[in-house]
Amino acid sequence: MNKTLIVFLICSLIFTQSQAQKEATPNGWHLMDKETDGYYGVSAAKAYNFLTAKKLKSKTVIVAVIDSGIDTLHEDLKAVLWTNPKEIPGNGIDDDRNGYIDDVHGWNFLGGKDGRNVGEDSYEAARVYHGLKAKYEGKEKEDINPKDVAEFESWKKAKAKILGEGDNEPGIDLVVLKRMLSSTQKSDSILKIALAKEVYTGNELNAFIPADAVQKTSKNALLGLMKANNQLDATNKEFVEGFSEFVAGEDKKEVSKNTPPKNYRQEIVGDDETNLNDRNYGNNDLMANTPMHGTHCSGIIAAARNNGKGMDGIADNVRIMMVRAVPDGDEHDKDIANAIRYAVDNGALIISMSFGKDFSPQKQWVDDAFRYAESKNVLLVHAAGNDAKDVDTEDNFPSPVYINAKFRASNVITVGASGDTKNGGLTASFSNYGKKEVDVFSPGVRIYSTLPGGNTYGNLQGTSMACPLVAGIAALTLEYFPTLSAKQLKFVIEKSAKQPDYKVNKPGSDEMVNLSDISKTGGIVNAYEALKLAATLKGERKTPKVVLPKPKMIKTKKG
Image (cartoon, rainbow, N blue to C red; front, side):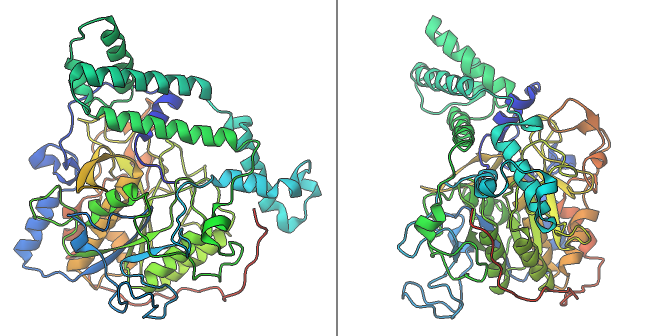
């Protein structure tokens, strides 16, 4: 799911968690160093000083970002876009004969041949529930063919989620939420006039002295929400838009209870979604009216460094290949599998994946794509998710654990989101966690990066932002130590993660735990430490021995 802006609203409203507002962290805090700057970032300056001292030269690394799209005209990104050397732009011909016409900077698996694109899409839980309802409604496990038991259990879980049964019973009343949103929007309109500015921060609102009772009521309403969500350094625009996005998502979930989801793919994309081998679909429109999330993630990795504009990416010699496969809703397994294969086949050595969902009906397809990437020595970096849940016990797909649960991918890093003591705590209140399934934490709170339209920049937060930072550190490491294998890169990132010497908040609660209790390494990634460790290793970049499944035509029931 493309979970962008204000994930903190979800966490606060569901878990009724409130933290005391600390002083705001500066833009770019995620690149800073705890010892020299006072912020728990990834020590980028120290990393580059280390490289300078070593007099190392870099080799360009291609990083694929599987996401919602990208602003290909952004001043800080256009120079770092991957360009397909075998494709002649705009001639309408598949010059490299890879099945994708004019894939100059990547490919859009959510596009139609007529130029239309999927923007909004349904949730996978709704697709699973309604797609299999006729097959399983009213049946018990003993009535089910043994080969269908796993599918039946998944359907029951989807039903519970959609209908709000059992542990999935919703904790937020949609009517109340809509009233809160309406009140917030009205308060914001009044305060824009009172403050004489369209955009203001929570801190500015806090310092504002109302002139009358209406202004006072408006201030208290909006400020109360911003304080409760630890967002005084957010702007009114960020906060209100994020709240609106969250309510729209909850509304979509409510509608999905009784209404089968619209088949956007059939109408726009036109591929056979039940046939994995039907791969040559989509178009080359990488902006597609929804590029915010992907633009922001790409900037974190690779925004042009030291050009005096906006901000700096973590890596200095990478090319971003955008593969659009993430809609406003839940991604489709087929698109993710094909996106991974496209990235690998076109030279990406690292793939950043800031998306996730609770159901994966065609997980085998994604597993096979993971194995394919592993066979080609490609590192996959995946966001852990933003539901403040334990992914050791609750699903978050795609997962490195293969469908038979006997093996797991050795080329995957799963990333939780960290913060700083000055912006709410060392762990992000929204981040998923897991002692077995979350490998590392990485800065993901109030991350400043590129935004689409007019060469703009802004702060977003989520494990979606933590993930590309790790992908960027991996890319930086591979630039200067190009013989490291994907497995060695994973080792370097995880082994060099810095472990805090004090307890942290368990996301979604007030419980204090060791970071090692909620992640495999118990550490926060650090570029400087990663490079130091990489310098001690002997490269092993070669094709690993991975058993690939025999290719076959796979058909599933449409749903």
